[in-house]
Each structure stands twice: as C-alpha cells, then as structure tokens.
Image (tube, rainbow, N blue to C red):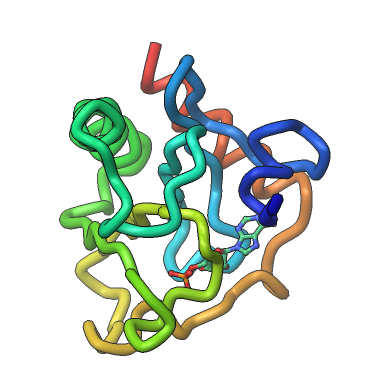
Length: 142
Ligand code: AMP
C-alpha cells in the first residue's frame, strides 16, 4: 500500500526536495519545527526501524552526516541539531514509512526538547519560503 512518502518519492505529490540519489530522498518537513527541518527517507518501503535490511540502513546512515552538515552550513545561527525517528504508533510515528527528522537548533529557539516534534509552524510558511530554504540546503550539498 502506498503512503504519503511513497507518493512524494514517486513525484505524485509535491515536496521541497533537498537531496536525492538512487536509494534515499530528503525533503523539507512541512511543519518546520525550526527553519531547515528536513526529513530523510529510504526510497525502498521500510515501515520503521524494525524493518531495515543492512543495505538500506547503510545507505540511509551514510547520507545523514552529509545532510546534517549541509543544513548547518546554511545558517551560522544553527548551533546544534536534533536527529530523531519515531518508530511505531506508541512512539508517535504518524507516517508509516521510515523517516529521520533533522531539526536544526538555534541558541535562542526556546524549544522544550521533549516537545520538539509536536510543533507545527507551517502556517508561517509559504511556497517561496520553503523553496528558499530547500535551495540553500541543496546548494550546500554541491
Ligand atoms: P512522524 O510523526 O515522526 O511520523 O513525522 C511525520 C512528519 O511528516 C511530520 O513532522 C509531518 O509534518 C511530516 N509530513 C507529513 N506530510 C508531509 C508532506 N506532505 N510533506 C512534508 N512533510 C510532511
């Protein structure tokens, strides 16, 4: 069964892509907990961490540090990053296609660590702003 991230991978629904190769796709999380909040997903359908084969795990984890550095390099105010993945409904997973949140942290963001993934700032964003953030990260990956 096709989920919303399968549809993004197939290009059936739009996303603000920042990185793509044969095995993975990275795009902006629509909620933008902080500016630059990005999701990294395996293209192969993997429901959650319990489902990974070694090869897919390797492909995803190889991209994570590169993507984290690229996001950080887009803004000198980014001083840290939360990288997390919710696995299973009881852990707060809402999209049943494995994904890794990369959430840039700013010294003055005043976020409570435990509440980070419940925040949704999408009302503050428009297409132009998403495109601007995605373009900065894409540029940093080249
Ligand atoms: P989780 O709760 O860990 O399963 O995270 C799912 C994430 O997917 C949430 O942070 C949503 O904001 C994000 N999300 C859902 N639909 C889309 C979409 N169409 N484009 C980008 N991000 C999305």
